[in-house]
Image 1 (cartoon, rainbow, N blue to C red):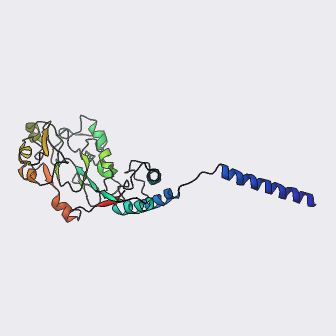
Image 2 (image 1 turned 60 degrees about the vertical axis):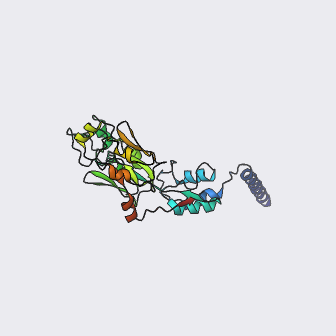
Length: 275
Ligand code: SF4
C-alpha cells in the first residue's frame, strides 16, 4: 500500500523538478515597460503611428524604433506619460492637422456619374465627374475614413474640424485626388488648390482655383512662394505666415487659418513634449 504512494510522490517530485528546469531554460523574458507603455496609449488601434496597433507601437517605443511622441492621437498627455515610463528627456514636437487643398465646392459636373458612390470608384471614370479634374469629387471617402469624427461632408464638400483632427493621415490615404496634407499648426497660410492647369482653364471651371498670376510670388518678402507648373507652392521652411500673399491673391486661393484657429484655441500653438 505504501509503495504506490512513494512511487507517485517520487514521480510528482521528478515532474516538478523537470517543469522548473524547463521553465528556466525556455523562459521568454518580457520587458514590463511594453505593457506599461501600451496601457498609457489610447488603445484605439487607429494605425496613425504607421504600426498595426497600440501594442505594436509600445514594442517599437521600448525597442527604440519609435519616438515616445509617435502616438499622434494621444497628443501631449500620452507623450508625457510615455516619456516618463521610458525615462527620457522631453523636446518640443508640434501638433499637425489635415489641410484640404481644394475649395471648389461650386465646381460643376461635366457628366452624370451613375456608378458606385465613392470617390475611389468615381475617379476611375475619366478622373471623376467634376469639371476640375484635380479637385474634390465630393462622395466623402475622406469623411468615412476619419476615425475621429474630424471630417464632415457639408453640402457635398468636406470640412475639417481642426479641433478634433489628430493628423492620423487616414484622409490622406483615402482621397484619390491627393487633396489632404498634414501640416503643423503654426503654419497658418495655405494654398487651397492643386490644379496645374493653365490659369485660363482654371478660371473656366473654378472661381477659387490658382490661376498662376504670380502676385503671391511677387509680394512675398521671404521668397517662400513659387509658381511651379501653374500652381503656387509654399516653402514652409521660409514661410512666416505673414499673410501678405493672402491679401494679394485675386481668387482667394490662399487661405489664412489664423482666426479660425484662434477661435478654436489652437493658436498660438502650445508645444507637445516627448523625447
Ligand atoms: S476630398 Fe477626396 S476623398 Fe474627400 S470627398 Fe473629396 S475627393 Fe472624396
